[in-house]
Length: 342
Image (cartoon, rainbow, N blue to C red):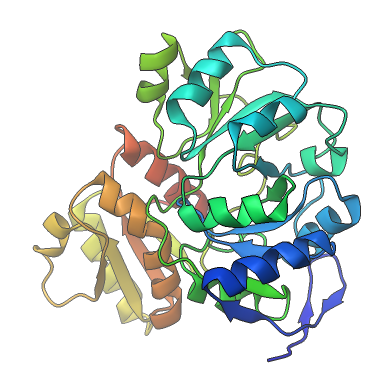
């Protein structure tokens, strides 16, 4: 299928988007990367939109396909820890500990970049985020590419991140030549980003590796609390993860029901995103179930938002709390809702 799209940067992209799986997809994806194209590939966090990290023209195609601001840095993906030494100028002892403990896995470690990494990848910064996915298809694809891959999430800028190939296709068809299918992402939200260039390891974006988990390894870790003027990591400065319809966060069960009834009385078609324990108390309200605990909620939150924007025109999401992985989920929910609470 060939479609026309206007990018945020004012250009039109039109191409056939193939949706493939298995060795055929990996081989074609690697060839496209070596030819300077972009390719969507699965990871355990979300699907990524990748290009050769050393090819400036290819990296620019990522920004074009997404309509992404060029000062929003990308993450460099690798298949082997041996690649790190060629991508950074310094690896601290604490960074080595994190690499040994959590890689491969849902973590991105920010370190001083090597001269070989173009500033188009880092948003003009002298640091770079390095990630080694644990997804077997991602690993096979990255190895076949024979080059580090710069990649953000595979969605139009500000839209919901995708955790399956179908959601990627819905958002990116006509913008990319290939989507490699790899099933549903196991983690379900983007990687934890930890900055190792300061005095204290600092989480810039929470994810499946929590602050407590990192502190248990390093003895100290803090979360970024300041005002963002320069984004050292994706997800910090710009609007992210937003569904196409309005979304709010319900602080209590009563406020959830009141908002549902209010919106419905205005002729809208609302839906509730919540966990099992809340859903059991509903009385005929439409809902999407995100599971019974923080891990299941994290795995399902983006997919539930995709479903919500397809079948409803107003989303009311439960407040899942701020403990452990719930805090990582709520980081995405708060951004998706623009901080609007009822």
